[in-house]
Image 1: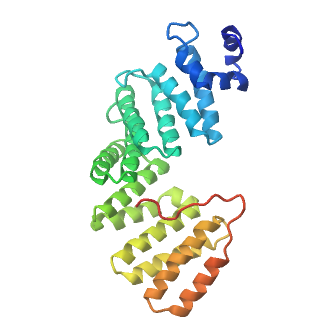
Image 2 (image 1 turned 90 degrees about the vertical axis):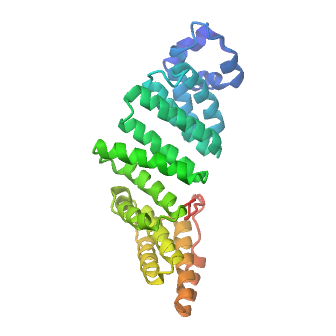
Image 3 (image 1 turned 180 degrees about the vertical axis):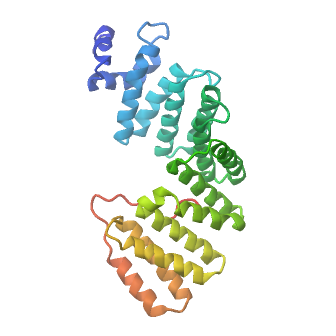
Length: 295
């Protein structure tokens, strides 16, 4: 085992063996807080290792490291801490990756509190944190609470004249799902249309195809099969484009479209669509993805 003095020499270079030792749960939890190597000077190594575990899709390891880092950087959410804000965001995502939404919500609440105290109640950072919290509340079916959080984020973004398409897209996408579950149909279509007009949807065809499919599903639920068919047709056209290469989503879109065509008594078209869908085989390197998230 490396000595503490040896560890301190390699921290500056973030050597992997040193970082792995730092990630060892026994070492992290048993290192005395009064030890001169503990505290702020260990933080860069912990952050670096947390990022490594995140990139390697090892959220359980990342959580151990990031919890330790957060206890150093922001022992209380009342403390101003730019690094604490960054760590809390990373920790939230790690819990999401581990499918632990209860702990993710807890980390997201900490992120909001740190953002408020570090950057201000009406800061962009606070709004971004609220958006993530709202998304988690939606996933936990806490729609009323999620709506309040998202509307506050929307208000802050409007005050700041935020034009970042990524954060705007995430907020509107979350609001769309919440409005749909709360049966606020007066708001659903407008939110969908706003999402479709934002750069992430324009730049990434799979997002636009998914949104068109969600909008089609919304119309189908409401009995407007004509509008639903129009949206499914758009989604199908997008997924046939050369830039759309997610085969699992392509198959799901075509299955949904075929179901609608059956409702419209267009059986030959429905059968042809199903045949095409069944012929689509995901690539070996393609991870399964669900078209319909918890909207």
